[in-house]
Amino acid sequence: MAKEGHKYIFVLGGVMSGVGKGVVTSSIGLLLQQKGYPVNLVKVDPYLNVDAGTMNPTEHGEVFVLRSGLETDQDMGNYERFLGRDLTNADYMTSGMVYQSVIERERALGYAGKCVEAVPHVRDEIMARMEAAAAHNGSRVSVVEIGGTIGDFQNALFIEAARVLKMKYPDDVLFVIVSYLPTPGTIGEMKTKPTQMAVRDLNSYGVQPDFIIARSKEPVDEKRKEKLSISCNVRKDHIISAPDIASIYEAPINFEKDKLGDALLTALSLPEKRRASLAVWSKFARAVANKKAPVVKVAIVGKYFDTGDFVLSDAYLSVIEALKFSAAKLGLRAQITWVNSKELEKGGAKTLSVLKGFDGILVPGGFGESGIEGKIKAIQFAREQKIPYFGLCYGMQLMVIEYARHVLGLKDANTAEIKKNAKDLIVDVMLEQKKHLADNKYGGTMRLGVYPAHLKKGTIARAAYKNELVEERHRHRYEINNAYVASLEAAGLVFSGTSPDRSLMEIAELPKTVHPFMLGTQFHPELQARPLDPHPLFTEFLRAASPKKKKQ
Ligand code: GLN
Image 1 (cartoon, rainbow, N blue to C red):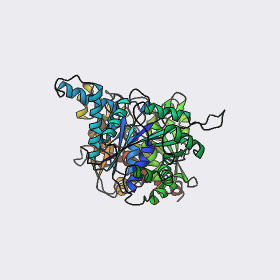
Image 2: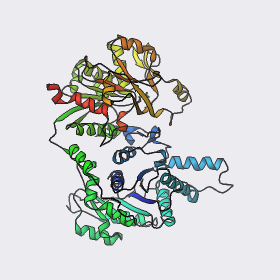
Image 3: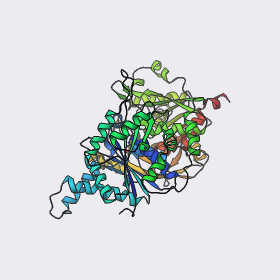
Image 4: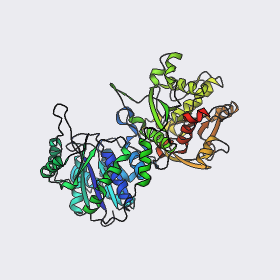
């Protein structure tokens, strides 16, 4: 059970999705943390998947892996980045998880012969999880983001759980609605009606919002605040204008200016323990937004971004952010260009010319066959043209395959993921994964979460981390085949990071004497890059790619 007087702030979305509930949740977390309160952030995803691991990243965005190995929604990544700390399994729930627990309990006669129903049993399971998250983290305030929009069928039980939690702890629960105010081009006037309707919808659940975060293109003026206040029954000083901003990292700074943190604490009857100091954060936010910083041009060669006529980069969110943080640290601006690996596969040398002019090339994680040969072409190009290269997970496996094909001369080098009967399986399925695949057990069965890696002296990796033993997050089924390690090393490739027992290759690199930066990791360093603590390998990659560096 949560401690007496634990506070809950529920963040709900009105009108439409995609207007920044996650950023509001993260910003509230950062502000309260800065004001001296330990905070945990909880994401509720209404879908029936038990975790986010089985979802297609093109549709759902990046799968973010917690330290524990739980595969979650990308919002959890934003939460960790804003709070600057790791979150736990207790901080994430899906309808699938909730129903699974209820059904398993029912099968074990855990409901003592009762008819098991959505209300009360599923709702109570949700409440128990919310309270467990509060207790587990030793936090004082939980900020809980309920996915989807008010009025959806799927999230109704979560709102119901929040309502009953408020009944149980009337002084300790707040509701914040993040709503959109459109300005239709033909009228040219900002409209409050959709938000009024969303609040009325929420009222029909028995929930009255305490705060409205009014998202819009331009700031919301006094007149519209008054209108919203009267019609939605919310104090005017609890209506916070949140116009579009250049970078999400400015959000907490703007909210602090509008005294959102103070207003939340007052509403929760919590005294401010200290003034929020956002000096360091603001310096970082300024560096990220600095348009005058020298540009470092990075090509990300991936495949999860074609949805209809739109290019979506959500599948690589943590990679983009990790690049931003390291660039800001180096006083650079990372300019990212998306290169579709499926396009690179099509033609010869001419197609590859799209890769010319970049300061660095990065191949992120991925699965399956499509676009693979395109990625290998890009890697060969980076190696031969001596363009700094950074490979993440699949990007490391393919870097080693490229080396085997073109340096060792093993033309049929491949990964068992694509060609099981290839002559040279440079990348093979991990032993413990064979059974999962044979049994069609795909959910939550990869090698997931944090594992240690030992770093070899005198390598780029060791110098970057300034550490002998590091811990990084993983998500893979395949690994470098140890039968080829000796011949790859004899041909010049260095395995600079391995599992402590040396059985699993964690980092491959080329020595600085032959290439400015050619390095790949079996793990996902992007998952642990933080705004105020950029990841050393991303920083080294960008340092090598920096245009200034090349002139020297
Ligand atoms: N598909 C590869 C594997 O399962 C790489 C995974 C990844 O890039 N996350 O090993």
